[in-house]
Image (tube, rainbow, N blue to C red; front, side, top):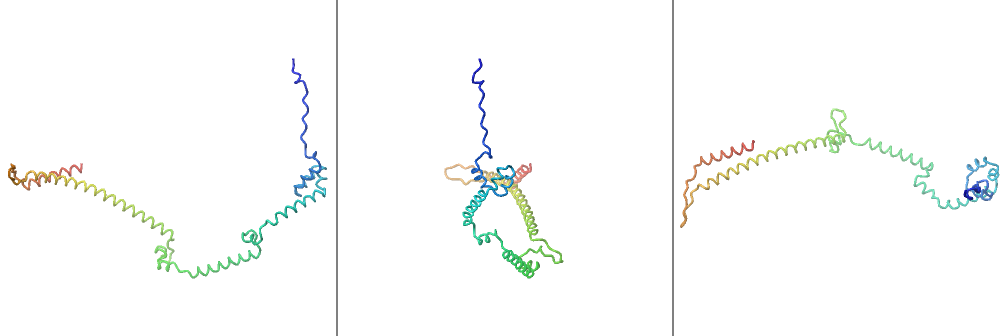
Length: 235
């Protein structure tokens, strides 16, 4: 058995109200917010809107609204002096004054540039480097190029000195290593010679008397150990 609620027809939905169905008083109030360029195409859409846009009451409302807006905004506008100071409003007098000021600045610059010292004098005073002036009459280098050239030369000299110092440090470390080996040989020779020296006898103590080694023997041992040290470093 079918459901009785499904067989009942649904009531029609009411159509949403459109603009022409609104009351004329409400339409006039809405049209007061439009300007003349907007009212003109609206008057061409239908007879109703044409009649409303030509209604004198609409334009009186528009003029009243514009008057109220102007009365509120005119006291808030900035003064003419403020606009001129902010360069928003420029008068003809201001433009002529600017033009004359630029001309005066150009005249002063031409006079100053004509009386400025030459490059040769600046080089003589030490203001510019000597590379900026060429006695042959040709133009010298610009100060920026001279500074770049000197910076490159300083970096080259610094790299050379760094390499030279590192080389001497390496050689010094090798020399110090050889000297340490020589010092060890000297210590061993002295220790060997100290063992063979004659000791003075003391009362109540037996002292062994040994003969001191010959100087040639000590020198031979020293040369031997020095040779061993050199061969070890070279290896």
